Amino acid sequence: MKGWMGRFRAFFLLGSLALVLSACGKDNLTALVPKGYGAESSMDLIIISTVVMLFVFAVVMLIYVAVLLRYRKKKGQEDFIPKQVEGNKTLETIWTVIPIILLIIIAVPTVTATFDLADNSGSKDGLNIQVTGNQYWWHFNYEGQEIQTSQDLYVPVGEKIYLSMKSSDVHHSFWVPSISGKMDVLPENENKMYIEAYEEGVYWGKCTELCGPSHSLMDFKVIVVSQEEFDQWVKDMKNVNPDTQPQDAVAQEGKSLFQQNNCMSCHAIGSSPTQIGPNLTNFGDRSKIAGILDPTKENLVKWIVDPESIKPGNKMTGNYPEVSEKEAGKIAEYLMQLKPSEVTPESAGN
Ligand code: HEC
Ligand SMILES: [Cu+2]
Image (cartoon, rainbow, N blue to C red; front, side, top):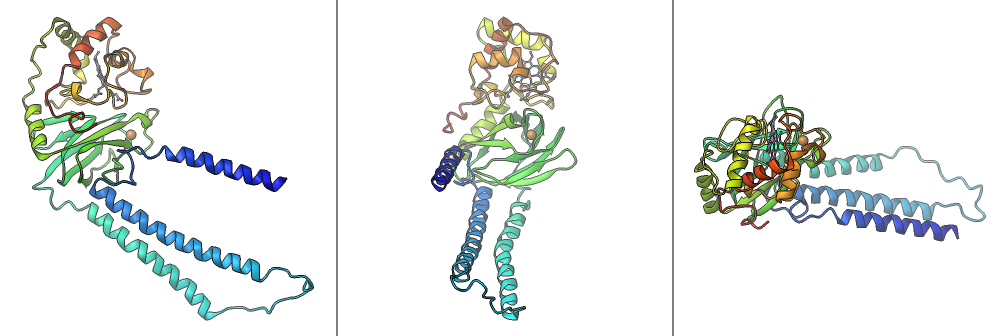
């Protein structure tokens, strides 16, 4: 009876574990279906390590079971003491050499990949982007282009993009599982990495270093587009004039409210060095608000009125005059019209 219960419990545990783990495979957020260079070389290493570990597991299990069967206590031999052996040069050599070989099989490709992914030699001619990690959002500065953007990183497909990463506050870590490996983003020094995406699309990025109460909400997107679309996007972003008046009256009022309520001291529209808060140049094109909310007016009003309820510990809360829901609605009307480009996460296949 007991054995039956035990087996049932084991099945139940395994079944629940399978259910939980099966949710880990979001299409654009999985390291197991690589869509970029860094992710692919990580995947190769995962396979090599797994094969080696399975081999070790199988050998140990085989020997373990064989010994259990062969040398178990047998009837009539209760007092039998087997021949006592001590030291065996051949055996000792074998079980020292085999692990060394296995470790070499893992180490050589790992070290090679590590150096390969840190290779920065093409950065002079390539696209260079400064990445800044902030509690709890990401900023991207396209070097030499006068383009600043936040939350959504636009890159051309099939190109090596060189990222220089630094944090403005605490330790963060940059990871786009489908495309790249992980890189620490620190306030002390700049870390470099390149990414290269194989397929157009929208890929999800995550902060993977516990950085405060809203760490798990520090999401971003990498929008991979064709070279022509990327050039178009660059052109559109450069053309933005922050002083343009919106067409309709409500949005115009929203723009004034945006200016009156201190929002501009942290948020830039257009390429400005201000980056205490996310750059909003193409806010209306984003696929999420604050990295996590669906881009509806309702959500935006909620964010403007009470960001603390959405991202605890964020740096916007309490640093601007109180805004009523009505005012926030007008500001939202204005911000959602900031759509400088036809190239968007939606057009890239989100
Ligand atoms: C003290 C600086 C500061 C002020 C003032 C400020 N914000 Fe923010 N804002 C931030 C920060 C920081 C974030 C990012 C929060 C996060 O995601 O953790 C943010 C995020 C946002 C976002 C989401 C941006 C995105 O890319 O998804 C919007 C929209 C926004 N703020 C609107 C406003 C409006 C409207 C005002 C004025 C009423 C305002 N902010 C005032 C700092 C500020
Ligand atoms: Cu973080």
